[in-house]
Length: 207
Image 1 (cartoon, rainbow, N blue to C red):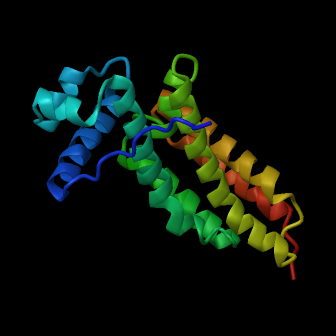
Image 2: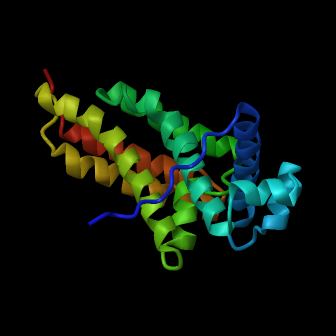
């Protein structure tokens, strides 16, 4: 008995990869600004300065493009934070990360919220593949947070469960980002992250 498998995607040339990335980047910005429903393939084509043949060569339909945008935001948002997440094995590292998150929202003037959370909120009930992809991005983010907390726990510096604490921090971050977006004010995010740091400190063992 044989099992049918999907053919492997053809390896792109350097120029082809650049074209594909240009399309995905343009789509990601449009979907961040206007939502998935408010972004058409024609909008993406115009923003990326791509032809219809180029657009549909790389993406058979809008769902394929949406999945590529989720992967792009996964690498941009979570991947971009991983150097900081690797240093979350101290309260100082945690504060540095939180300060970065607040400053980033100031730079954005509190617009757009979390690029990954916004995609998940819009697509979770209408696109199962997109929901799974967003879930994977959140799991990667949670894992990054957990790594530093686990190191503290293994050194005997943290008494709380790193698994639950990482999930709590990520959930608090998402709530803070949403309220910051709604209120156009970083205060909800600042208060939320400050409370989370205090919570971690309360479960640390002082020498």
